[in-house]
Length: 300
RNA sequence: GCCGCGGUAGCUCAGUGGUAGAGCAUUUCUCUGAAAAAGAAAGGGUCGUCAGUUCAAUUCUGACCCGCGGCA
Image (cartoon, rainbow, N blue to C red; front, top):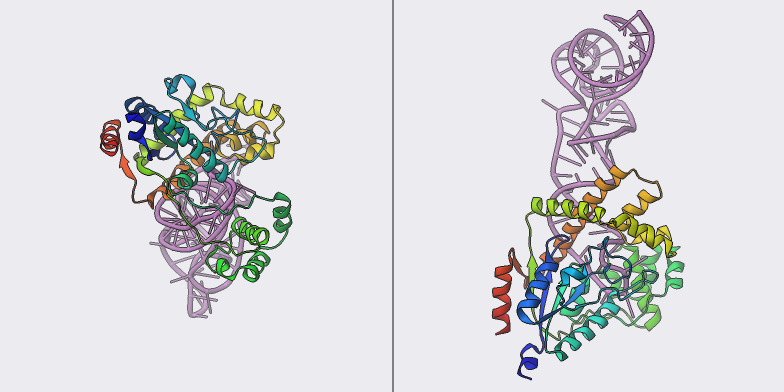
């Protein structure tokens, strides 16, 4: 009983770019502090997407429970809101087990949705409606939004069709303007960021890529195709899936595929850092020892 | 050696008689149910070298240097 109370409302987050070594750090900390890991990765939620998404292998989990892996079918689109809900449930369950929840992943938006508890308008994506709007010019979309919700139209990125369409969708479905972003923080959170020197990270990405190719990453994509996914859908998953799909369709030679994929992963790692950088509460670390110390202090 | 083609941003290439652009890369940034997504901004070039024509040359002319292809 005492143990249960101890971790109540406490949450540890490990984030960082692709290939920085988050997963093994999470397992290490989980073993030290009775933790259970919750993945925060927009691709690892899908079944059948293991090697390409860099999912941790069962062996590597060292019998630490991992949540939010393989919770969705790649045939359907998974969204932040679903993630937020499932993650909150998982955290509740982990508290019940008397353990410490450790969120580990690189999808900043997913992490933010849980840590900050951002309140996302309850309007389900309506693909028919979106496709309709997709036919309009960007300028037409801006005009529409100006008419529907002048306030939101002022702040929105007027070149970003996807955002414009979403904003219009919210207004049309709720018959109200887009609400101001509100937060509902539910947890006492410690955020650790794994930082790596640029060149070191590039090298790690390269080695990891080679390793996964040997493990059958290409076969995995062939397998996905066999389950009935279209090439277009597979390409939508990005990075490994996108470039391997190009290769398998003969749109790209093997060497070019590898080269461009490496670059694309590096670029992705940078975008991740851009997202993380603005969060000033992140404790940037480079080794396990510092991480352990920080968590120990946090749990006291 | 001759003929042809080319030499413009880190890379691949547009282009013009009034000192230059694109895509990718680089850097910075945004983020309200697709986030590995979607979008924005910035830096970067004595336009191969030297000379000539011209008010003005990266653009025209000549020579030279370098690369590629063909012929010998």
